[in-house]
Length: 138
Image (cartoon, rainbow, N blue to C red; front, side):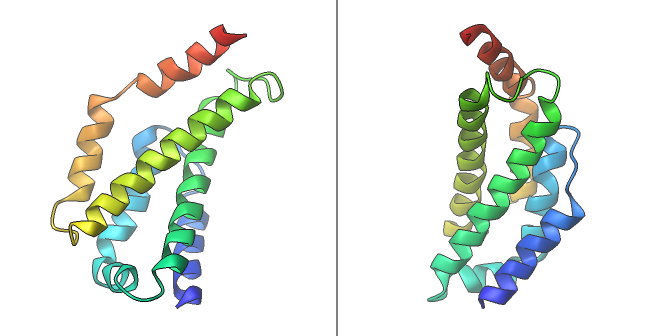
């Protein structure tokens, strides 16, 4: 069980290690979950849920961290904005994990990919505004 979840997470990370926009970061992860609905729901509903949640959190943290690193490479100096960057990464990771857990709790009954694409469109530019506000905090 643990090996299956680790393999799934590592496959997503290796395949999508560079991103250009938030939707580029999130859609592959969501698409993988959608493509493997039956297996993921089985694992989520099993006694091994904690293992699954650990790897889900790890994968989401990695994906969001990679996106933020690429998206903010020329905005943040490493040391002077480290706390703000970590805060934004944690916020977006929690948003992604929360959305996935809601979908799983609903037994994957709605189109998560469509929902994520619409949310990304609705909030387009908000991440950049948050990153830029960090520069004003100094």
